[in-house]
Every structure is written in C-alpha cells, then in structure tokens.
Amino acid sequence: MSYCLNPRCPKPENPHDVKFCLTCGAKLLLKERYRAIKPIGQGGFGRTFLAVDEDKPSKPRCVIKQFYPQAQGTNTVQKAVELFTQEAVQLDELGKHPQIPELLAYFTHDDRQYLVQEFIDGQNLAQELAQKGAFNETQIRQLLNDLLPVLQFCHARQVIHRDIKPENIILRGSDTYGKGEALRRLVVVDFGASKSATSTALNRTGTSIGSPEYVAPEQIRGRAVFASDIYSLGATCINLLTGRSPFDSYDTNNDKWVWQQYLQTPVNNQLSRILDKMLESIPIRRYQTADEVLKDLNRHSPVAATPVSVKSVTQSPPTSTSPFVTKSPSQIEQELEEMKTQFMGGAKPQQNKIKSPNPTPQPSSPSKLDEELEELKAKYLGNNNS
Image (tube, rainbow, N blue to C red):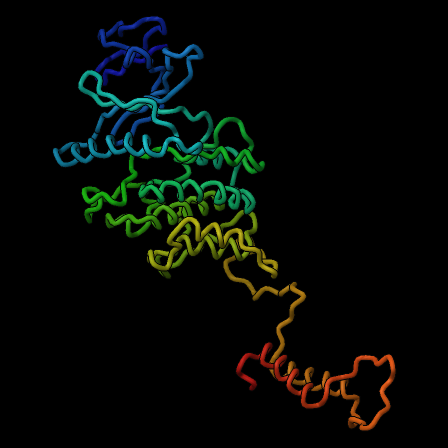
C-alpha cells in the first residue's frame, strides 16, 4: 500500500504501484524514493509513517516524520518549527551511534518539512512491560549499563534528550530482553524534545517539554540540565520494576519516593540507593553525569548487599556476611595486649646468653615490641586511642 501524506486527503490509502494519490492527486513518492506505507504515530509537532526506500534494491524500511503541528498560535508554531528542525540537526550529529536512529534525509516537500530516519524494528519497553510484566533487578542493571553510555555520548555533544521514558527506548529486533549482548541493541528514539545545552533560545525559563511522569522538577520549570536525563532514566527504571506510573510511586504527603513498596521482585540495597540518588528532586544532590552512575553501579563491594523486601520499604539493618568484623577500640587494645604477653611469654629478658651457631629469630625487645604494637593500634584506631 501507498499512503498519501496530504493531511486533508479524505482517502489516503492507495495501491502500492501508483505514483499519485487516486483521491487527491498528491505525489506519493517523496524525493522520488521514499514511499509511506502506513501511519504509526502522531504527536504535537508532526505525524510519523512507516515507509520504504524505493531507491535501494533491498527496499529497506524507514520512518518518515512530517512536520504537522497541532497547536495554534504564532509563538507555539514557531516553537514547533524550531524543535522539528532541531531534531534533524541532533539526529545528524548523533545518528552515527549504533543505539540512536540515523538521519537519512531532511527536506521540504509541498511546503511541508520532512525528515527520514532509520527504522528500528522492535518493541519499546512500555510494550515489553505490558506483555511480559515487571522487570527484575538483573534486567534493570543491564538496562542501565546499556543506556547510560548512550546518555554519555549525547551529553558529551551537549545534547539533552529531555524525553527519556519506556516508550522512547526500543529493543531492536526479536532479541530476548536480559540475554547479555542482546541488550546492546536498546535504541533511544524521538529526539524531537532534545535541546542543545549551549542553546539560549531553548533555555529560557518556561520552556517545559517532556512526559510529566518522567520529567525532573527543574525541567518542568524550563531549566533542563544533563542530570535531568538521569532523573528520567531513574523514573523509567522504577516504572519497569513496579509496573506503576512514577506518579503512583511518590508519596506527596511525605515528599519521598516509596517505589520499594510496590516491587514485584526484590532489589538489593545498592541498586535501591542508586535509583534513589538518580531520582533526587534537587539537581545538585542527584548524579551529575552518567559516568558517576555507571561507576556506582559496577563498584565491587566486599559486603554483599541485602535485598530490599518485596512490598516493604522498611527493614532491619542488614547482617554483614563479610569476613571482616568491626571491633571496638577496647577490644582491639585488649587483643594487642594479649599479643604482647604472648610474644614476651611473661618473662624478663635474659642477658649474657651464649649465642647459638644457627640462631632462630628472637622476639623483639620490649621497647621495640611496644613501638610495633603502638603502630598497630594507630593503624586500627587512627589517632583516637580512646
């Protein structure tokens, strides 16, 4: 089928082998090569179509985005134009990354702007959640390890996505989520809300773009920063872990996140702390870079983290399984005194002994031993000997 891109066409469906719409006469091939097949989405700034590149022998599928703002008002339409153009610029700069769709073309046709981008074949994570249920800790860890480098890549090029959410993360192909390298095929899409961190036009207070459930507080006020994307990724994770809207995982009366109450599988304390820090409402308390999150996520701890109980946000302090037991200063001093007694054997040093031709190592003198024990005490107790 060929789909007519004229928004006013009353019957846009056409046979696949015609070049002009049988109803309105509009040209069906964009740039003499891109043929729309069917609509796949519509937002505030445009319509999206699944398409075919007729210019290539394999006839690969692609996506056509047509600028078609639904909002009214000169300022709003101007903003829409700005954002649509910006998406093309951002994709041109970022689309060489394997986890970001590549921009194939950007042009004007019949006084309308179009961009053509790589088609990502797969389900988004909101669809995965609906079909397969809540994610577990392993999946969330893999997701973070897979997507944080993409944010690093964008932020290093001064681009803030501003609309990270499950719907904008696609699992490419038929890969099974959670199976190692398959996760490397998670793709971040929809850069229509993205902005350059160096842009003054889009950094004015009051420019709020993004999906409310996943948007950081400062972004709502029109002051998005790199850490705003980290917040949105954290909100995405708790949505996938709980199957609930992030709005429903926040206690407004007590001003705190309570997503742990709604877990469907346990999450250990380390990951819980990381997600809570990603979700800090005050930006300076949040992770500032994706690299900081990655380092905490993959930091090896000698003490095994205790799982957060399902359906429970409070728990008793975890019991350490580490072989290293913390002791009080008095216990350490007592043990050092016992070591001193053991080495000295309670006897006074003897003088004028005949030396053996093959001497065995002798214990240190009392003064030397006292000095060594003091060093041990200082090592374990620091400068505080109390």
